[in-house]
Length: 462
Ligand code: ADP
Ligand code: MG
Image (cartoon, rainbow, N blue to C red; front, side, top):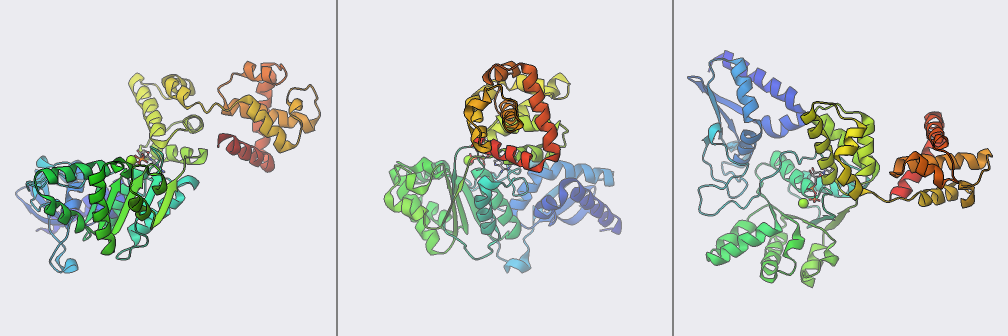
C-alpha cells in the first residue's frame, strides 16, 4: 500500500474521531484497520463480527463519504472480520449465533442479523443509542447505573449474580442492559454476550421443543459468558419456560457466568413465578430504578438536545421536565413531537406551540398538585397558619410565604393567574403576577429562599 493511502486513512480516522467523539470512536471505530486498497476498492477489518456489523450499520455511510472525499478514486469499501489472533490464542469467541462470512456494505443487515445457519440468531439487536454515555444519572437510577457499570467493568470476576434491575416502564432498564452489552463488547470482545427479552427466550424455547432441538438450545444458552434477559415478568405463569429458564440460570451461576435480569417489579413481587425462582433472582444485587425527579428529567432533555445539536430555549425544557413526569420514554416522545412539529411548520419552538402540540400528553401527565396542597406545605414550612394564605395581613412574615405559595402555584399547576388569585382570598391576577416576579427576583440573590423553594418543589412533586 502506498504511504498516501495510509495518510488518507489517518485523516478519515481523525475525522471520525472528531465527529463521533472519543467515547464512540474508542468503542467502535478504533479497531478498524486498513487492509488494502485495490482498484478503488478499500478493504478494512475489525476483530469481531459483532463490531463489524455494528460499524456497518451505524457508521458505514459516513466512513464511505469520508473516504470518497479523501480519495476520489475510491469507489467502494468493505469491512471484514479479522480476529485478533494474539489476544485470543487464535480461537475467537464472538457473540453467539453469528457466522464469519464477510459482506460488502450493500448487503448490510441488522446489527445482529439472522445468519445462514439453520439456528436463527438468539441475540436481539442492541440499540446503538443505548450506551452509558447517553445515560443520564440521577438519584433515582444511580444504584442501578453503578451496578451496571460494575458488571461491565468486572473483567473475569462476577461482582453479583444475578444483577436484577427493576422499575416501572420507560425508566431505563433496557437502556442499561444494552449499555452493558456495548461496554462488554468493547472491553472484552472475546466474551460471548447474549441479550434477549424473556418473551424471545420463551419463543426460542418453544421453537426448540417443536423442532426437537432442545440440546442445541441448551448448549447455546449455557455457553455464554454473560446472559441478559429483559422483562422477566413475561415468563411468570409460563411454567415450562420458567422451568427451562431456571435450569439455564442455575447452570450459568454454577459456572460463575454473569446473569443480568430486568423486571417490572421486585423478585418477591413476581406473581406466577415459582418460589425457588423468585428467591434465586434475589440472590445477587437487586437494584430498583425509581421514578425520575425534576433534575433528572431536565438533565435527560438537555443531553438529548445536545446530542441532536438542537438549540431550544431552556425554559421549554424546564416546562417539559416539570410537566411530563410519567417516564423517560414519554418525555423523549414529547420532545420529539415538539421538534418534529417545529420542523414541519418551519418555525422555532415556543412555549405556546409546545403547549399546543402536547395538549393531550400534558393533560395525562397533570400531576394534579392542588393549590391547597401547596398552601398547606408552604404554611407548614414557614410556620404560619393556613388561614394566612387567604388573609389580608400584609406583614412580611406572612406576605412572603404567601408569595412563595403563589409562585409555586404558577409553576406547579396549570391554573391561570386569576384562578390562583381567587384561591388566595380573592386577590387580583396582577397581585399573583407581582408575587411570581418578586420571588424570581429575590431568588437570584437570596440563596436560602431559593433553597426553600427547591425543597418545597421537590416535596410537592414527590
Ligand atoms: P424500560 O426498559 O425501563 O421500560 P427503556 O430503557 O426502554 O425503559 O427507556 C425508555 C427510553 O428512555 C429510552 O429511549 C431510553 O434511552 C430513555 N432513557 C431512560 N432513562 C434514561 C436516562 N437515565 N438517560 C437517558 N435516557 C434515558
Ligand atoms: Mg424495557
